[in-house]
Length: 217
Image (cartoon, rainbow, N blue to C red):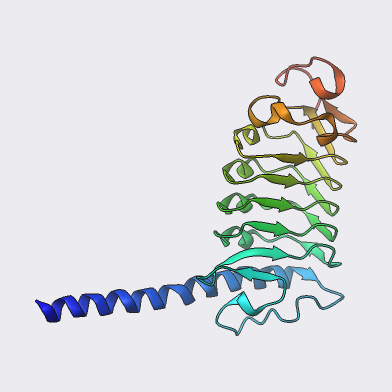
């Protein structure tokens, strides 16, 4: 019985050691996918070496005690290119800071998988297409700043489910339709939506119901 117990404990210890590198490698692969997808004129990603066991030694990456990525700080880094769906694999990521770059293309719907995310700062880029409704899965999100892009389409009503959202800024885009006003969106001011000429709503153009009017293509 004692031998069996010791064998079981040894297996548990081995499993704990083997799972951490697998997670780290997966997250390193996700971040390296971003490196391959962007141009980096100032070499801020030079330390992102895919041959390392985990990405926690890379510059601009912060990890927790389990060597899982919790922060990605690449604001104002002169990066161009596109975001990659692999970023959605960073399940413990709390801060996604990619503001003031030259990123273009859509916001991947896979970012809805960032279940620990507190802050998403993608403002002042050249991002296009619509805001993914999948972001409504980010139940811990407090700060969502997408202003200063070229996003179009409606504001997804699903985002009103983000009960912890404290700051929303989707100003200076090309959004259309009407503004959701239920849930967490009831507390956001006109400034959150400003400079979207095709956007309508109670905060901007009088008492317009969300589901009526507001041409949008």
